[in-house]
Image (cartoon, rainbow, N blue to C red; front, side, top):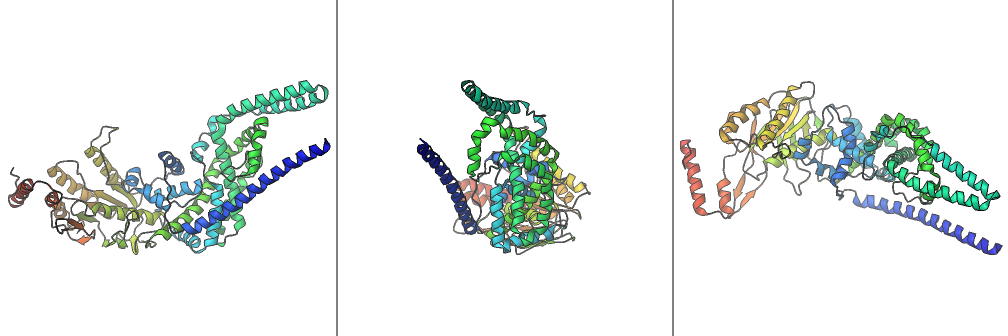
Length: 559
């Protein structure tokens, strides 16, 4: 019997050892494969897809820490900045991902941080091993899952004061049952089983109520552990940031001690955590720890925010360097206090094989040209580069000179079906917010972009009102880039704006755009010609040409 018992025990222990060994082997193998993947994918755009729920989660840190000026929703959507963020999101932790999103929304309004930011970005670009070491740590910190950490931190108060009395009482009953086993085995075993069943049942109910907050606490633990791992790497280029993180980490010493039994989670494959699951269900260890640690977290909400920002700043700086490695050409911006903007060989980040354009202006630009000639793309290109200059110190150009601006746009607007507002109402509200920003002289000058001003109303009133609005978007406190089909505006505003245009050429019954920015106003009209190219009736086209020619000669429309 003794030999059989030893064999059974030996077999059980052997299985446990094998499982632990396999777990360690898998972790090491995964680390090696991940490092190889980092090398292989450097200089390539990420391919991750995002659900609306994920975007909502990513935005939480920004929403919680929104500054008095930030890129507003209209401008963000006009420029498709979600896609720009996706190109740049080489992050592996929620802290890095959420901070990068915040960073792109929050253009720096002074040059105070430019040198520090650039030094850090370049350090990661030039030190591959250190960069990958840190990325391994950020991967270990990992993601919070479906929800942001900040979804739960702000609701901790709603949990109220949590009492451990009933959980402690259940564990005391275990001790009583074990004691009874020595005197009345049947009664002791029965009591033990009853208590165990009761604890398992109540565990599931109570754990479900606080599960999201468990995720938050585990993530905070992983961040605190991540600070230790980052410090252990001894990267020479981030000593200042590590010192700040270590100072913050000290605030979480008591929380870390109280939270040891919660586990870290994060998909690290720790076999010990899996083996602890049943013990937690039986003895409620994690609920006891959670209730005890809850008070510590409530005392350090702001410290959690700063810790996330510190980790996020480091990883987002790595992501910016990775983004640069994907680009055909980039430069760091030159900031000036002069009222001017210059760009050489500037291009759009979301267009393959882009046509590059150069310009220089001290008073803004008014663009003309036919549909699809490149006007809107040019406006977006300048706007995106203006944002990237002030957020990630990176411009898609050979050279880019700018002031520090507050940036707004009124471009890709549409009817608001929810409020019942027409396109025109939506448009004039979008323009009014820009005029209000110009009137607020407490901030930096305004850089604004307007595509087809007042397109939602009739020609006479559009030109009259557009001319006055566009004049209001000039001066020492604003620089405006606008596109219009109304050639009349280029004459009315020639003292206020530089005129540029895009043109096209009809070759063998096809229209060809070169997308090159040209000096002066557009001199050709090809809207009617386009009708013929795509197969409209020739008689219809002939009458349209005749009407247009008659109007140009007499200034009066005749049917």
